[in-house]
Length: 160
Image (tube, rainbow, N blue to C red; front, side, top):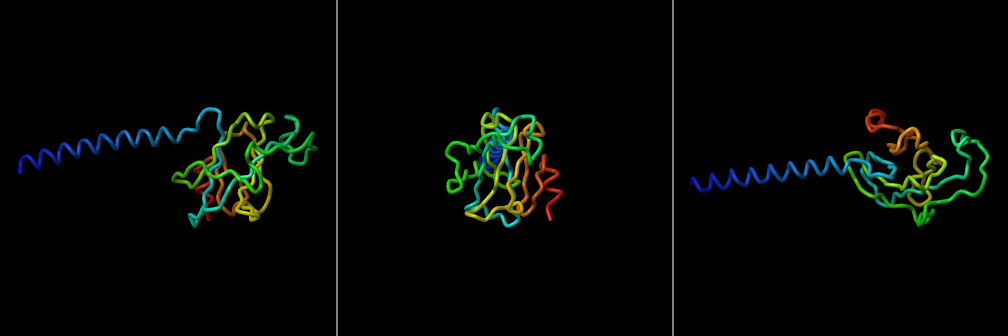
């Protein structure tokens, strides 16, 4: 009986120790990697199959990037390997939903243009969306909501 009690105590300590490391690793994983941007996406139904990200850089001058109606000075450029039929798949899943990690160096003018879609069905009201990197390196998006949230808390508060 004493041996069983000792084994139980030792195994409990080992499990607690392992959980401590797992918790620390999970917290570390939540940090945005250097040189990356992130789009976090949440669906109330939890169904993410087939949803992807179309993301591109527009060739607006840096001075004009705040103006969505500014004249473009060239052709839009999608990220390498990303096209309408080859949408970027989510890079991971967390307690908010899924997320995509995007290389920041692909957006010289500081404007990230994107559409979250499944086939031809676009989320966020079917509009082309964007955000400015100077306002934050991460955004949070709720399905069916055309707003771009700069914090997870704001996005969660806005859920219907």
